[in-house]
Image (cartoon, rainbow over all chains, first blue to last red; front, side, top):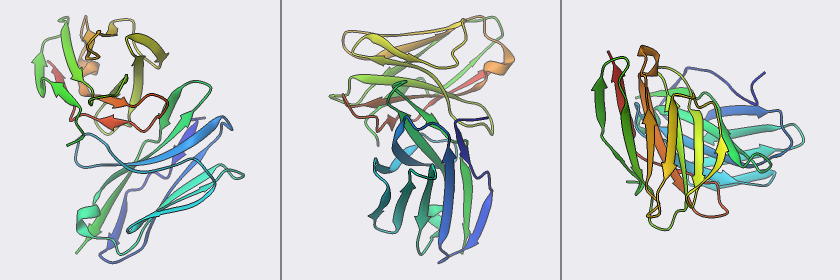
Length: 111
Length: 112
């Protein structure tokens, strides 16, 4: 079983929709939670970073962490065609000193 | 632009050969990470260096090695290349004590 499981997708939504992207993890040592966006084989770009349970908002993006359920989500409001990309969750294991990435969910937002 | 630079952008070589990929981290970042991303695959962590020392190791093959130099740039050496080594190789860097990683544009390696 992978340490980080990400909903595989692909996901296709109409412009303006609310998108929910999800990951689960198995290791309680995971303490820092990140979301990256990767456009067509470019380098991943850091979107959100949080270390506590609850919600963190940045513009149209909200990162949600539930440590009790070992579940993290990224919500995108008013999705735009420019949001079409692969989204990767990443979780940092403080004991191992490294991040583990999910396999990514590819999102397409149709005009 | 993340501030992380990688060279070369593309590399085409033959099986059995050896190549070196180069990464320059963002100014002030002490950690450098290397990842492999094969076609339609997720990011596979290879290795991390912190201020010149190996910090963490992932699924890095014995044919692969890396180092970080005093000026903090890093090189990833891939030897005895096989067709399956064809992939995107990303370098990332981060500040001390923080694991938010900033990725370079990647090197696309094609082994023929």
